[in-house]
Image 1: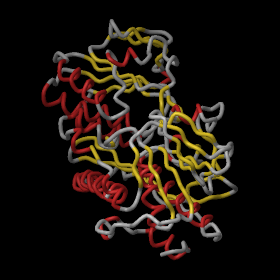
Image 2 (image 1 turned 90 degrees about the horizontal axis):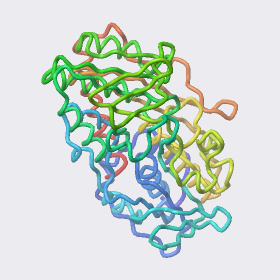
Image 3 (image 1 turned 180 degrees about the vertical axis):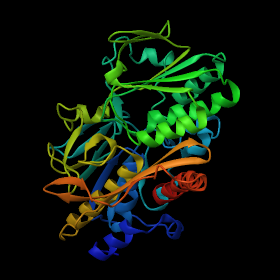
Image 4 (image 1 turned 135 degrees about the vertical axis):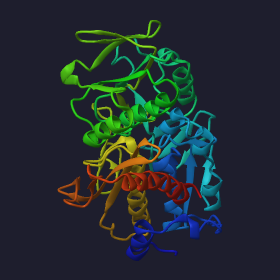
Amino acid sequence: MSDFNRRQFIKLVGGITAAGLSGLAFALPAKPKARVVVVGGGYGGATAAKYLRLFDPGVQVTLIEKARQYVSCALSNEVLAGDRTLESLTIGFDGLARHGVQVVHDEVTDIDAVKKQVKTKQGKSFAYDYLVVSPGVTFRWGDIEGYDEDATELMPHAWDAGPQTLLLKKQIRAMPDGGTLIITAPPSPYRCPPGPYERAAQVAHYLKAHKPKCKVLIMDAKSVFSKQTLFEQGWKQHYGDMITWVSSADDGQVFGVEPENGVVLTEFDEHKADVVNVIPAQKAGPIAERSGLSDESGWCPVDQRTFESTLHKGVFVIGDACIAGAMPKSAYAANSQAKVCAAMIAARVNGQAEPEPSYVNTCYSLIAPDHGISVAAVYRLKDGTIQSVQDSGGVSPTEATPQQRAREALYAHSWFRNIVGDIWT
């Protein structure tokens, strides 16, 4: 396994799982072929770190992640429904260490792409030959008047799984029967396109059982949304008229909030709610902007073949933060991009031709415990842009049987177990 080749790439990217490798411990080389630093230990960064070691154990990989444990946003809406705990979504990094990844718990404060150095909050400095940055997203504070970081304690976003999730859950539990929850859905692009609409369904699942007179109102900055027909069909089937979606064309875009009063302001109206869940507009994580990796769009432009930044050579940006053509900002997309990126770096380290990339994404959404829906696609590079392969995937059929919907719900949970095993074990 000293050299990376096409056969290894196909085997590892195409189907290998960590299950058969979890017992192996890779020793760090006395003199590494290359030093790779990975910033961020989520779906993208952790995948890149592990697969770089799998592709070539001669590469020294250092993962820098400030959190001691990663909490998955994927499936976190089930916490709001009461069907899952945050602990079940909390993942450690010991598995990466067993693969020879040096895991450093610290916060990256600066990236010097000229000197090829990463600096951290604890005053450490890490030199690299290649840098992979997977910073996730942050919020565009100020796009909604009155909504800033302080306001999240009254109107939680819950778009980072953790304390905000528990705060929103607590507020929902305290709602009076007959109360109203408003969810504000952000403009595109943002992390997890179906997320706000799955959240409405998961909350409605709880309310139907405990507070059946409540209403869920989705105020949307968009006129259409991901898997819309399937969501609306499922909402009606399980929750009747409990959920109402208001598009931007019908004055659904929120321009301001009054956190102390539970008020949401649109262009022509004012809405009062018992609980308000504001999901703000988003952009690449803070380190991307501080390091000059993002452009005026707020996102990071990359060579979509390799994910190398078009602004700083030798720096690769993957996951939600990058501009990746037709690929959505999802956990599975980040995982797929990370494998391609790792393969490209391994090829460069070994002086070999870069393999032809292929990318995939599948996204499950749970409307009820036994009602899942999904969208899937395969992507190829065409004219320098990641584009969907025609007829390579699609969405769940609208005429599916209850048994098929139940199987998709099982697939969603199976997907989570498998991808966690693929990345962190």
